[in-house]
Structure formats: C-alpha cells, structure tokens
Amino acid sequence: MTLNLLAIAAALLAVMGKVNLAARRAQIGILLQTLGWVLLMVSGQVESGSAIDRLLSTLAMGGIAGGLAYSAIAFDLWCGRATVARAPAIIALIMTVGYCIGFDSYPFRVGWANGLLTLQVALVVVALCRKTEVPVGAWRWLLVASLLVQMVVTASRGVLGAFYTELFPNFFTPHPANVTFALATNVTVVMSLVGILLAHRDEAQRELERQASTDGITGALNRRAWLERATLVVSDSQRLQQPLCVLLLDLDHFKEINDTYGHEAGDRALKLFVDGMNTVGGQRNLVCRYGGEEFSVLKRDADLEAIRAYDQRLRVWLAEAGPRELGMPLTYSAGITLLQGQHDTVESMLRRADSLLYSAKMLGRNRTLDEQALELSLQ
Image (cartoon, rainbow, N blue to C red; front, side):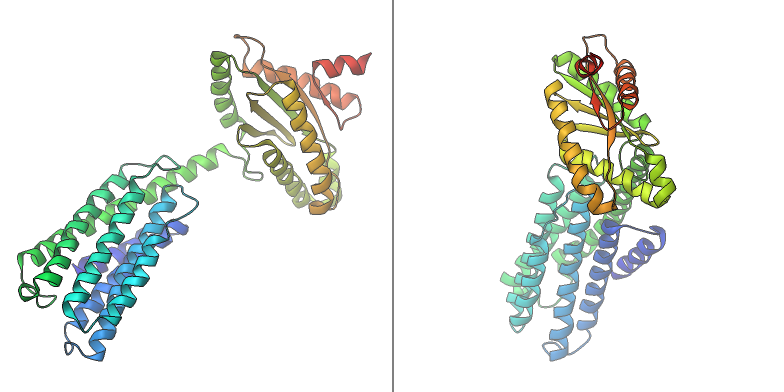
C-alpha cells in the first residue's frame, strides 16, 4: 500500500504538469499521506513505546490527517467553492495533538486516531455530495465511493483497537479487519488517483472553455459567447414577457489614450471600464467586449428607467475611478434599446442600439441616447 502511494505521488507530480491551486493542494495531500504511512511503517521497526516511537507515530498521524485536509481543500476548489471547508484541518490538528498526549494508552490512541480519521473522511464525503458551484463530472462520485469504503475499514480498526485490544495488539496484526483494511485501501488509493486526475482534467476543460468565451484583456465575454447567451436570454424574456434592454457603449477618444499614454494604459482603461460595468450592474447583466473599444450590456428584467439608472451609476463610477486608477477621465457614448415584442432578435436590438450610439457620437460624445432621448435632442 505504501509503495502504491509512493508511485501515485510521483505520478501526480509527473503527469499533471503546471498546476493551479486546487491541483497543488491535491498533490500535497497525497504527498503528506504517503509520508504518514512511511513514518508509520518505520515506527513499527523501533522500540515500542519509546520516545522515537511516539515522535514517528505522531508525525505519521499528522501526515495522514493533514493529507486528508489538503485533499478536502482541493475537492472544494474543484467544485467551484470560494470558501473551502476548515473542519477537516481542525480535526487533523486535534487528532494529532490528542494522539501524542494519549500515546501511552494503546487502546486510546488507536480508537482516537481511527475515530477522528473516520469523522474527517465523513466530512469530506458530505462536502463532495453538496451542490457544486460549477458543472463537474462523475469523478466526485468515484471519490465518494472510495471514501465511504475507507470510512468503514478505518472505523472497524478503531473499534477493534479500542475495545478488542487483545485481538489487535499492534499495527501489523493479521486480523481479518486489518487485512481487509489493507486490501481495501490499496483499491481506494487507486480510485482516488483516478478521481483526482479526472477532476484536474475537468478543471482544465473548464479553463479552456472560459478562455474561448472571454476577452483576454478585460475578462468580459467575447462577441461569440455573448451572442449565444444573449439569444437564450431574449427567448426567455419573450416567453416570460419580461422587459429586456441592450446598451451598446463606445469608450470616448480611446485612440488618443493609446497614442498619448501607450497601449498598456489603453488596456488598463478597457479593463477598468469592464470593472465598472460589473461593479454597478450586478450579476444579472451580460457584459461583452463587442470589438475594439466597443462593449455591449444585456440587462435582464429591466425597463428603460432601470437601464438609464445603470447608465448614470456607471458614469459616476468612472468619473471617480478613472482619475484615481489611470490618472485620466473616462467617458463613453452609448445607445439604449428595448426588446420589442415576440419577434425581436438580438441582432435587431444591436442594430438599433448601434444607430443610437452613432447619433450620440455625432452629437458630441459623452452621452447616452435611447429613442426618446434622441427625439428630444433633435427638437
């Protein structure tokens, strides 16, 4: 089993290549568990009950429990959770300290360590079964099955060592429960490796999809991805008879920003522009870099007054953030259009918004026009 873990730890480091935070936590988790089992085997070769035995055994428990805690963090990150579970790490710390303190009592330390390891694994199972924040594959159910088996065999060793000590006097006792534990762990270790690699592949696939659908400079959706999602939103709004707005925006004098301050400043201006749209708009908006310095916003369940209010908030935000972050003011011209009936389309809305945007530029820039505002400006 220990050789199996060593091979898996080496494989994870070798085949995963450059990894992010979640995969790195998984690698550390496997390495710590491997170290724990190696130390536990070594502790069986020294004088039982000696100070060296206590030290090696305690470090072994810390490695095994710490490895589980790191794995729990990796699983939470792969499930898209911003806040990772801390309970497995707390249990790992409590278990290690308690094991060292109660080391002189063999029944206590075996029951204590295996009992808390069982609880730790149970918490990881519960976390894996919770609703995920991102779409994930079947890897989590493979891990759940693996961890459930580990729970059963670990709990059986704890009960055996704590209450039937004469049948399980040391770690290498060939009791059926201990043999079952070793055999089951060999299988579940391999299952865990497969689950980790599948989770890593899922995340890599999501990252490729994200890169294919977003603009690399601003983080906003690119035009293709925005049009796909906007088409679905328009259909839903028509079916539910909900209002919908499109705002087409063009950053004023962007060429002058590039020529005067350089392209890096231009990129920062574009990024700040998108940050502002996201900050004042909430999560129900679809923001897109439509092309160059032109952006589009699809605002769901919003009438003309709502989109006008959004436009004013964005202008106020940019008036404060532009000089502070870039040392220059940022303004924009924009056109607003509303969803018109059951036969309207995204493309039609964009054409109307583009016409209004053009009029805003012709009338002096730094303004937003809708059909009503255009009529008033022409009177």
